[in-house]
Every structure is written in C-alpha cells, then in structure tokens.
Length: 232
Image 1 (cartoon, rainbow, N blue to C red):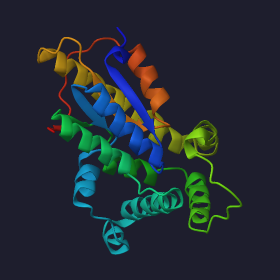
Image 2 (cartoon, rainbow, N blue to C red):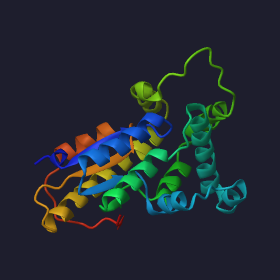
Image 3 (cartoon, rainbow, N blue to C red):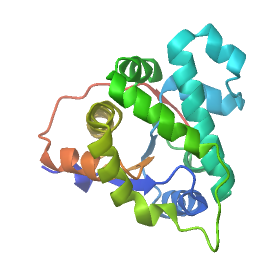
Image 4 (spheres, rainbow, N blue to C red):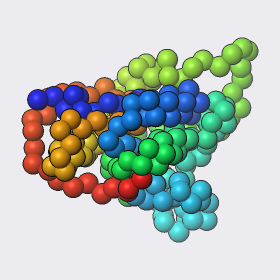
C-alpha cells in the first residue's frame, strides 16, 4: 500500500508569498482530517509567541545557539528580499487547521538534535557555509524583476548536495525519514480511530517533498505509533 493515497504534500519555499497562499487555499478546499507541518515543538512554541532569538540568547546557548541564530538571520534577510517573513506558510497551515477544527501535527525532527548534527559537520563544510552565508547579508543588486525562488529549487538542492554532502544528509535526507515516519503514524492512528480513508495534508519545505513522497510510496503498513501533536 502506498501512503500517498492518504497524504498530500505541499512543498513550499519559506520566503515565497505564493507558498502561503497555496497552503491556505489547498487546506480549506481539501478539508483534510489532519494537517501536518515541518515544525517541532520548540519552533512551534517560538512561532506562536512571536519571540525571536537575540544574539544575547544565542551566546547563552553556546555554539548551537550561534548556529541557530545565524540560520535565522539568513532566512530573515531572504524574507525581506522576497516580501515574506520565514514561517508565514507554516502559520497559514496552523490557521487553516484551526479554522477547520482538525488536529495539527508537528512532524519535524527536534531542533536541538538538528543543531547538534550541524555542529558536528566537517570543518570544510562549516567554513564554506560561513563564507557563503556572509553573502546573504550583502545588498542584492537587481536590474529587473526578482526570479521566483520556487522555480530554482531543483538546481539549488543539487548544488547544495554537491557542496555540502554531510549537511545535505542531516538537513534533508534524515529529516525526510523522520517526517515520513511521523506521517505514516498519523495515518495509522486516524485509521485506528475509525477513519476509513484518512486525508492528511502536510506542509513541508519544497526540497523535502520529493524525498518524503518517495519514502511514503515505498513504505509498508506499520502498527500505529503516536507522534506528538496539537489539537486544532
């Protein structure tokens, strides 16, 4: 059985306004039994409180805090360039789930585990990431209309996997596995509650969509395992 019968993935670009609109429209039109988002508990609570990590906060958490702070600033800069704060598409999914009164599931790997893996990356990849990350903070010169980042994602992901093989593994492939497992658990738990043909919509980053779909398509039926979740 393919779990793609039950799960529809929306691949989003975290800094694209089109993603936010697609997420809200699709969920309200499809009216699923559950909504899943690429967040963990820590990031969900931070998003709900609208609290942003300061440099002072990052310093208290040491190396992992500084890595998290730098990544957040990179996304913030991109959001300014494309007219959208990072996470707006996730907020749209949360609002849509609440509007429909369906459960909201948090399916991503724990951010502390992710940061630990990033901190353990090879020195070459750390240095390269630091150097390339600095360019994000420089003004972007534009002679015309900015390209839609969603149309460029395949090239971006291929280049990222080539330049950062370790980081690609931990940031993309391993998280795909975690999210696919959680989605399978959601489907099985809905079936155990008596939903004969569960419909789940999952909102994930565009780079995760093909990998998760591949895993869901190849997966065999498993016994239900409860993921942590928030009721809408």
